[in-house]
Amino acid sequence: MKKLMIAVGVSVLLGACASGTAMSDSGGGMSSNPMVGGAAMYPTKDIVDNAVNSKDHTTLVAAVKAADLVGTLKSPGPFTVFAPTNAAFAALPAGTVDTLLKPENKPTLSKVLTYHVVPGRMDGPALMSAINAGGGKATLKTASGGTLIATMSGSNVMVTDAKGGTAMVTIANVYQSNGVIHVVNKVLLPG
Image (cartoon, one colour):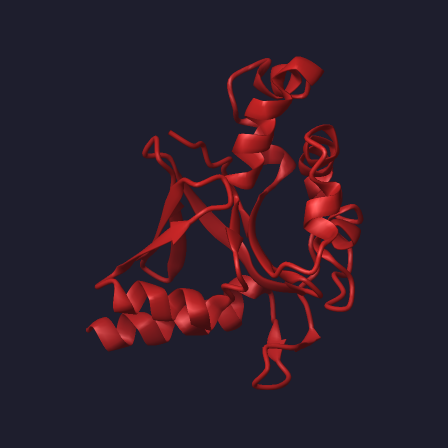
């Protein structure tokens, strides 16, 4: 049963969930990335250069700029980013995003954003391997020093934050020159 779950999960991460993403070589390169926010994502561009083109990630891009993390996310990395959509940010309590974007809240904003970043390239196969090795869950150390827990729920990869909130990976394996993005439907919050 566990092998079937892992096989299904890998299939989802490599295919259906990623909107037709296909592996082109064993080195993790992509022949075609999924479209994100109506825009093509190019594996030759970095995380920031791709994200600015996604109409579904304008809030995330504004937050990355406000937190002065552009330089970090343009660096060689590699990074794995669990990227919340605009709808995920809009689901936060009223006024939360506006408050976080204020200059005086830059340290808090930075902590929230870096909580969505895992150092290294944790694409679908690596994530599934970690979930398998962890007996059904993977503990991921974030760039902010916190942890995220990745599990499977049916054929979906779920990521649970320190407060018990859970986000689903809606688009997986969006390869970048300096890492990989997995689009998530909720904002993850550190403890």
